Amino acid sequence: MSLDNSRLVAPKAFARITGALYLAFIVASVVADALGHIGLGTTQQLADSLTTAPTSFRLGLVVAFASALLFLLAAWGLYVLLRPVNKDLALLFLLLNAVGVALQCASMLGLVWALLASNPATASTAIPPAQSQALVQLALDLYRTGFVTTQLFFGAWLFPLGVLVMRSRILPRILGVLLILDGVAEFVWFLQALLLPAYPAIRVPGTAVSFVAEVGLASWLLIRGVAVATPAAETHPEAVAAASGTGVR
Image (spheres, one colour):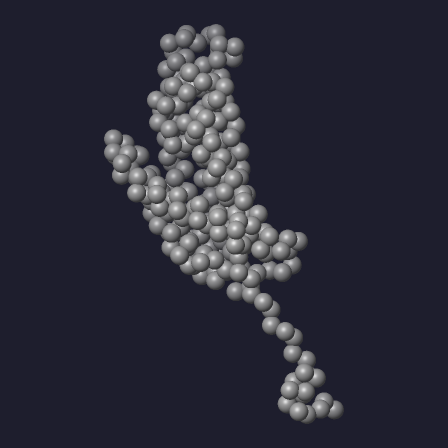
């Protein structure tokens, strides 16, 4: 399988840019969680962060929105790299990723509302404080539910992505296997959060698999790029004749 040589950026350079975007998304996600517990934090952790460190929470929210954009750009880069393998599967994983990012951003609007409602300077005076606090808690719960729902799409996109990585011959097959296992782990997280919320330990092994798979893919792209097939040299009649010891008349 050869990559499209008509691009403005060389395939290896484009792969490294994609890896950098993917790694930046992972780092931004970690930073958003560290600043405001946005991502892996519980509803109570979100509420505590919002109350005790609103500035840090606000900054974490900005970083979380930026991470969503970086994730979509990384998915587009992977789409461009893997489209020559199978256009339909490449389009499928890009669409699944885009839907997941859209849901993630929509759920974070609840955090924006909670931030505004908890700030005396921006909160509505028509709503009593007790009722306002209840609405803030509802917004945080809604965000957590929305964030968990996105894992359905973020898990689903990993299956066609993993299959394409395995078939591509430009990336190690083991990365494709890990991505498919990562997809299974995301589904486990989705089901555990909605059906068995009292047992968060169920998703711990999958979290380790997700870290290895996605950091592994991002790091490989950033450091190694992709394998590019060397086009065969053109064979002219004169060369064939010279090799066979005959002349062209």
